[in-house]
Length: 291
Ligand code: ADP
Image (cartoon, rainbow, N blue to C red):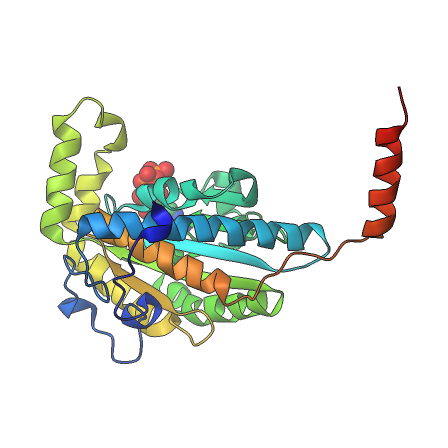
């Protein structure tokens, strides 16, 4: 029974995983499970229980949006190939009503997208009021792959960190709560996951030859991620850096961060916009009438 699942969080993952001023990506244990004192099966049981709570909160957010509320939530997912972004979408967001979720994936920009400012395609996918938006990759690719592959001159990407901070601040002021999650897998685990994709015909579709090229630039990506955390983990929109070698832990942690974030919104059910007693009486009358 999920309701019986025991909570083994010893530290709120929002505290345990937040990238603060002293955060050092180079020493992150990517096989770790910060804050969680239980094993995998305990983790899975607790995640299912929290999923029910998350689903309930999501419905309240949706109801609020339907009743004129302007708040929304945006989950930004970043991570290198095989880090498990798809697994978060499937296993965490899969626990809530799909009607309430707006999912957007950002791949290589199209010619039309390239003709616009890099935030143009991102803005088009922002969640409407009442919705949880999920970005599978995001505007952060514009300071990650764009920087590593030198797709624009350095002077241009250097200016983007402050621009992104200001843009996110504007979103927050408009009622969007931003939850930024980076799934950090180790080099060895990424190698093992890519090998599995090449070993199994049911996984070939997940493999792209460019994954090898990206992997060969590992140190440059780690540096680019470290700078993202150093320069865009703000008070209002911090980064949560999640060790991702254990998939169960990453999913458990994101479930908890998201559930806690929604809890902190203090959501309630919207009041009736009609006279309840009057409507009950009117309904009773229709029940008495014979048709
Ligand atoms: P995934 O690999 O996440 O399953 P896709 O293969 O559709 O998804 O696309 C992801 C690729 O798009 C990644 O290699 C990523 O670096 C690239 N990409 C995302 N955003 C940008 C961007 N702004 N500029 C260049 N490449 C980008």
